[in-house]
Image (cartoon, rainbow, N blue to C red):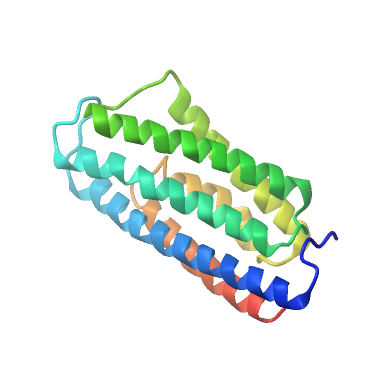
Length: 191
């Protein structure tokens, strides 16, 4: 295990800042999930051009969702202090790049008042967020900080509750981020 933090106080300070980032990202993801659930299930949306307020809410919700996804993965990666290995590092980068692209695409759609399609980029980059989260989860599997059953659920809960959401899946993501937050706060406090 390589440890990039040289002293115990530095590690504790890094853990504290990573937990703040994680908790903020989890709260943001939960709030976005509530908006996503309401927008998907109780409003009318159009397919291409924006005709309803819900179209803007659904697309605009992608902006904080992307930031929450970046923060969540980055915080989990930082809490491992290198114990998640290259899988964690590569997964963090893939996830971040994919979510930045989705952020830009959602922003362009809001400015255009229409669903902007850059070829198959939306499904491709949504799949890349799944891959990035799966790699971080695989790296974290070895480290043992996150409960293993959560790591198995994380990639699907993230993608199906956020950028590929349908029906009640945002509620599943709310439950997941709640359990992840409690587990990591407890386990990090015991180290």
